[in-house]
Amino acid sequence: MMATTHALVGVALATAVARVAPEFTVVAIAGAVLGSVFPDFDLYADHRKRLHFPVYYSILAVPLIGIALAAPGPASVAAALFVVGAALHSLMDALGGGLELEPWRGTSERAVYDHFRGRWVPPRRWIRYDGAPEDAAFAALLGLPALAVHESPVREFVAGAVAISASYALVRKPLARVWRRTVALVPDAARPYVPARFTEATEAEPDRDGEVASAD
Ligand SMILES: [Zn+2]
Image 1 (spheres, rainbow, N blue to C red):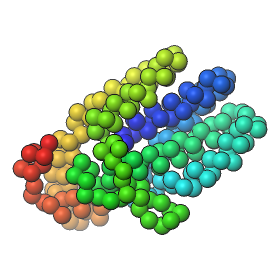
Image 2 (image 1 turned 90 degrees about the vertical axis):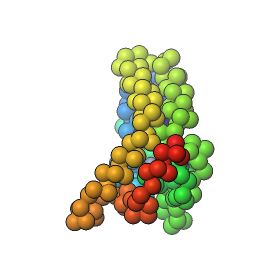
Image 3 (image 1 turned 120 degrees about the vertical axis):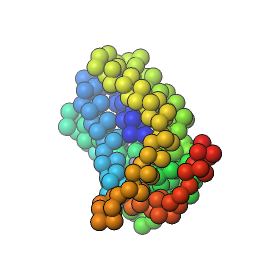
């Protein structure tokens, strides 16, 4: 799923909380959105493993939700929603595509790493890949409650995230081709600094432009 889809999951989550505790609307949105995008800060190092914890975030969320309910305040509400957002992100990554440069090919069986069991969770591909049309549609659907409930600047944030999602979906496949060609030009000395999933893609099938074009 796209980062914007994850962010909009956070907005939807915070919107639900704001309905019952409107005094925490701002901290709920801040905590939930930050937590919902936080795992992807590992994008360039052990992506979907280093900061993705589908089991541990979920376990940690239980006492934090309890604290937020028992002693509601800006810090407890933000902390609980941050971890719930990170948990949902890590769990939802398993519903998308695999960890590969061109995930619509369906060649990777790694969706998200389960540190508890010490293995990769395979991709369900309910949303076939990040930036798929259904990903953009899901993002728009998630944004609807927030657009109906919130005012500026949340409305603008949501509308912007939905617009970015749609734009990214349009360029997702051409962008991957540009990435692959760019990585192919990286000198050997600099390749250790390129994420492995990118170099793996170029090394495994270095010359398949025609195939990619017909696959689209
Ligand atoms: Zn992720």
